[in-house]
Length: 137
Image 1 (tube, rainbow, N blue to C red):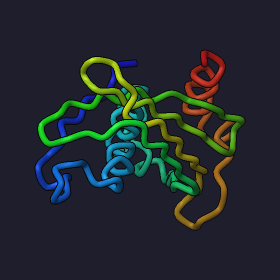
Image 2 (cartoon, one colour):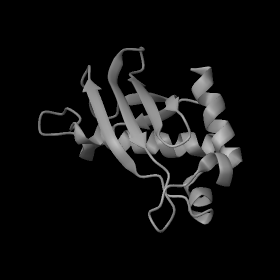
Image 3 (cartoon, rainbow, N blue to C red):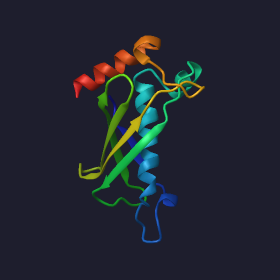
Image 4 (cartoon, rainbow, N blue to C red):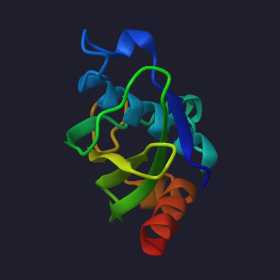
């Protein structure tokens, strides 16, 4: 899996020149979208198949501040997947390898009617990819 790179934008910083904490959650989404694309299930494909994967929980531990024009490298991994709930971990580092944030997002899979999707039965290809990635961790 390739690591996602985000460059801190000026508008993402506050008056002190530090990245506002809310942006790390946005970067998680950017990295998650990239991750899904890398495993062959980008958002366009999910939506075409009628799958919605909302965030049901998110947490972020801030370790080190980032500033304008700094590159942040975000590694996404499957922390846990048992068919219904997907837990992704995000490890964010600066250019010298210091951890700037560690975060987690929790997702479920539902259809357009809001009913749970049984990935193993309805979308075995996606189910198998996520199971392989969860077992590799």
